[in-house]
Amino acid sequence: MSKPKVFVTREIPEVGLKLVVDNTDAEVWPDLLPPPYEVIKEKIASCDGLLALLTDKIDAPLLDAAPNLKVVSNFAVGFNNIDVAAATARRIRVGNTPGVLTEATSDFAFTLLMGGARRLVEACNYAKAGHWQTWEPQGFLGQDIWGATMGIVGMGRIGYAMAHRAHRGFDMRILYYDVNPSEHAERDFGATRVDMDTLLAEADFVSIHTDLNASTTGLINRDTLAKMKRNAILINSARGPIVDTDALYEALRDGVIAGAAMDVTEPEPLPVEHPLYSLPNCTIAPHIASATYTSRNKMARMAAENLLAGLRGEDLPNQVNPEVG
Ligand code: GLV
Image (tube, rainbow, N blue to C red; front, top):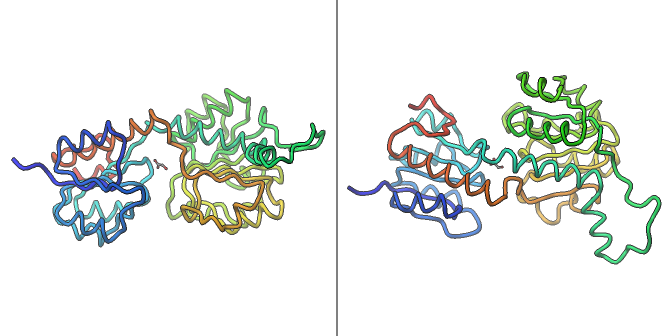
């Protein structure tokens, strides 16, 4: 019997790639950069499955070009790159990789928090550039972390893990904003659910952990930044478009808030000439929060298992549109 045809849009870790290659007739895009949209469209025309990354836009016209497609497996927990409604309408299962990157991502969000609060990157660059002449009584003063107030936007898995670090590790008071209450966070960390204005007014750190959707796009904008404390640090390890990039630039330049530390930007990659890079109080990492060996290996295995289940016509171990069954 011939094997199902699949297109894999990048080389994922071996533990997942081997599962796919051994069990399917797979074409794997070999480049570092994503295949252009038109190339994906052409490649999947005769495919039964697609293993995609968050950098691949999977929309209705693309799905229409693949009449045999049964499954789109995303190598990510976020799936805003996929038009899930369009996939559901075409009875195509969509999978993601939740859970396995929660701790790695919140570890990194906390790294951003600490680096931003204590001006780590700025200070290291200063030393490296030869400016370090003596111990300065007022050099590189930053924000206190221990006992500060943490504002979590989106108390899902990663928000909870961030609150855990903040409360148990650094004795922080936890405020959160979410459409749903989190009994766990309230019970485990004494977290208090507040409206967005209260969170912005009281938090020393505002850390974003919500998904990207119509109501969270531009959630952090000129108005919301103006409501934050002047000593506050904004941390974004979720999705770039949740923060209005131009408004953030102005707020950091004008001292409306003390700093920002971000793993995600809008656009991505942020062009090297973007003025945000010129600000000493802004740290930008190239979307690496889940990049540990363990997490990426688990994501690869999970993405492969989702893909193979979909090809067999079964529910995926992690399916974002369970209504396709
Ligand atoms: C990474 O950003 C992911 O959604 O997995």
